[in-house]
Length: 364
Image (cartoon, rainbow, N blue to C red; front, side, top):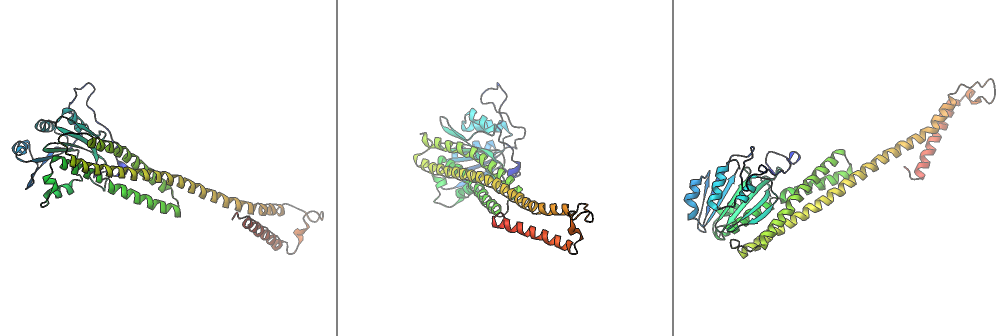
């Protein structure tokens, strides 16, 4: 979810692919890709160092001197830079192709000396556009590629800067990769919980007075839940794959922490599934309430019509052109002294009698 767009204007998730017939591992930048910037974090148990706006020279100078290196590349426009990063860390070209062709399904691929994790990331909980985050990690390095600035990694950076004892500085690159992936997964909780609160609010409003705009809100929220489901299920599968595989650069104790992240993803899936079920029920309830309200209106209109039918009949009869002088059967009451108030009184009695009858029948 990006900073500039809201959930209602979210662009669909699309995978950009190289031209048909291109060689595997061909890197082609998206014309809309952001300018690439590097941030290098050098980590050891005793100290750490962060270099903003880092260069390839900084990588060549510092990488071999620190136990753990975290390189964060923001923006995917500079293809030569990405290729050079791949050369320095020996990243597989097919994985780099997936980095540039953003919109990949969340997955995990294992290579000889490193792993590649592709995920969808929320870089700002106040907005609702997804962004691909690619995480490479090996024995002593972590490399992250993100499409634009903004990410949920600030808590991880603060933990790296915290005083000793510091697990992030002492447990190695696989634990740092876990912390970053865990931050990505946990970033889904605030928007999902906010959506649940919004659903509860709409439900309370509907029970009082259903409105048309509520149906639109419910459909938009269900669409968002469907998108989340499409992201979270493959993310769960990727985390399970990361735990099951035995590779030398992922320690057994780190898998325990990855298993906790897998539990978080399962919890997110449960929340989204419950939210979808509730939204479906609310949509059906809104339709039922709207139909019931329409039926009530029709019932009241029908009752009013039934009350006025005999009155209209009486007025129509008395409004005919009778001649009481020619025959005693030609409406003699037209000559009655109190004929007009008597007619009104009779019509009132008819109306009141009908209302009483409807209440007796519990139609009102």
